[in-house]
Amino acid sequence: MTRVLLVKTSSMGDVIHTLPALSDATQAVPGVQFDWVVEEAFAEIPKWHPTVNRVIPVALRRWRKSLLSAQTRTEWAHFRRELRAEQYDLIIDAQGLLKSAFISMMAHGVRVGLDFYSARESVASWFYAHTYPVNTSLHAVARTRALLAAALNYPVPVTSARFGIDRQQLRDESSHEKYLVFLHATTWDSKMWPESYWIQLAEMAKQHGFRIRIGGGSAAELACAGRIAAACDAVDAMPRMSIGEMARLLANSSGAVAVDTGFGHLAAAMNLPVISIYGSTNPVYTGALGQSSVHLAADFSCSPCMSRTCAYKGEAEVTPACYTTVSPERVWRALVKQLGLKAA
Image 1 (cartoon, rainbow, N blue to C red):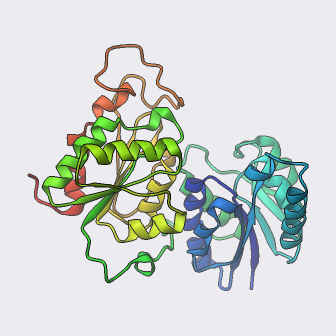
Image 2 (cartoon, helix red, strand yellow):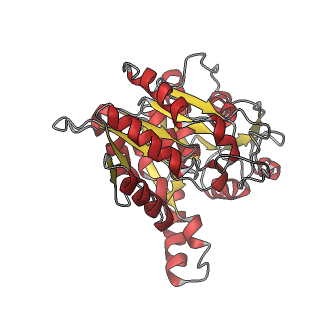
Image 3 (cartoon, one colour):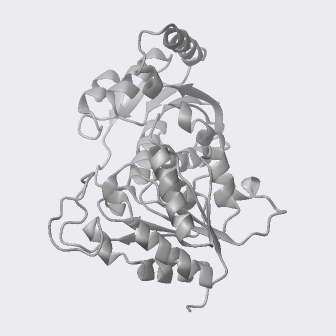
């Protein structure tokens, strides 16, 4: 058996993007088994992949807010014991950051990762025994697949990405509700599709007999969901939900519409019919991948700008201005096609 420790702590989309590489390795290396270091908020995701033996949660995001507290010191000591409990054949830092390199140094085994020109933080490569070049112009999923193939010495498969998430295990077979999930919440203002567009899209879905579920993870996101629900009686505003609860909500839905957000990647990875909307970001590098995933990118003079806020100063129907080219009508047409519906 080949025992591998994988270090990929965050973000949610990055964690999901790593799953196909594990599927590749399972096929190419008989008996390979992974332990995975991941931020505590995303610890449920690796458990969905059958080749993951042990998940080791880390709480760097929370610990850095109270570095000197007794609780942080206690939890850090426990994390170190968990990390050092096994002898690994290989430790793969798939993140390429100083923080992930630091974590990998505490474990027992041969450390490998991206080379100086491929890592997101180049100096992280100084802490590995072996480094590998990976084309930085590839999609994030392809980059991770290439890294694990190099580290475990097998050719990069030419097959499409397989995320290893069994949607059927998350489904409630007793539920026969017909609903769509709107994934509107995101960390960048420039990635937020306008509220008025979500309302228009909800009205279109209503005409086809769908209800819509919409929620959020923060007070502002939940308030936005509430406003959209108040504007269309087919929309149900959901309470704050865990990743597992959201996964089950998606698994039982007919499909989803998402901005560039972690749950959009999850919906696509579950092979759910999903329309992903891109304005300031580029789906070529980090788009939500899946067998039933469609990317709708803005066709605007300054898109993709890769900026957290919209800096466009001209006249525009909505803000961010680039979304004037990704109208509710365009999204609905794409969704109708993915769901196999007849256009109204």
